[in-house]
Length: 370
Image 1 (cartoon, rainbow, N blue to C red):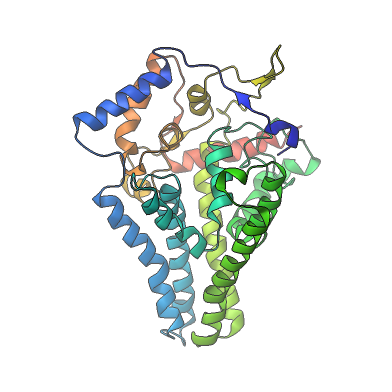
Image 2 (cartoon, helix red, strand yellow):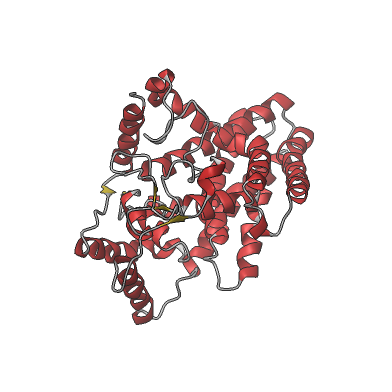
């Protein structure tokens, strides 16, 4: 992000009977007619239990020395923990930190705190994801998801370097390092940057408090995730380190492959705000239309995939309705698609995950050209 880009950006007004107003009206009617809550249901609570178990049960087996003489079983535990970490990241902590488990904020905060248990920090995550990504999707200089290392170019609005022509080949390595970087340095770097841009204020935390809390969380995390297995798993320290890296590389790669095909694709517009006559920075479209035009759904109707990745294959619905639990997205998608068609808004969707991923690779190649 650039400091001058953090001024308020205005989206075009939706107007009476707008696309967004119509969507809200029809979505509210769906929940009212069917007598259901937009928050978590029984299926969501069952899934939460499964995802937490997928992470913590293999860990408990490992630190109690179960399978200490079996390397395949030992590394299998780490692999299962990676799957649990993915599930927690896409479903449990993600929904909780969006406030969709319950209308009770304390419930959402309690469940969202699982992010600290798996090595992250809720404050920086909410700023990057809820505040910047969901408000300014694909706007270079404002969407923090675009502002990665300079070796990755995710927008045609970003600087070009000669090595970007190879990014479609080497991006996967950096993707696999995503959560490892997050659990070590990213939170600290974000705290300093968000303090500079005055983004910590809304979370009622100072930079000193944030750094102190993150440090405590990291000590706790590395204490149980590495020190205890080294002491009690019965495996040598280097096997524990390798298992830890395996977990993060699998989780980072899979999470990246879930998120990137929804935004970094050829159909996204990557529009920038323009300076108005009164000096404000304005977008041509309304916020809802901007979100749909910069987001792509994939693999609709694929039950297990939808279940495992927290409905994030319905990314359009997630961006439009961040306050609704993801278990409702499959039923909301036809409403959104129909309404988009009526208002002349292009609804992007890929039929399979692999086709969506190929679309992302094509975009990486395209962005690798000057």
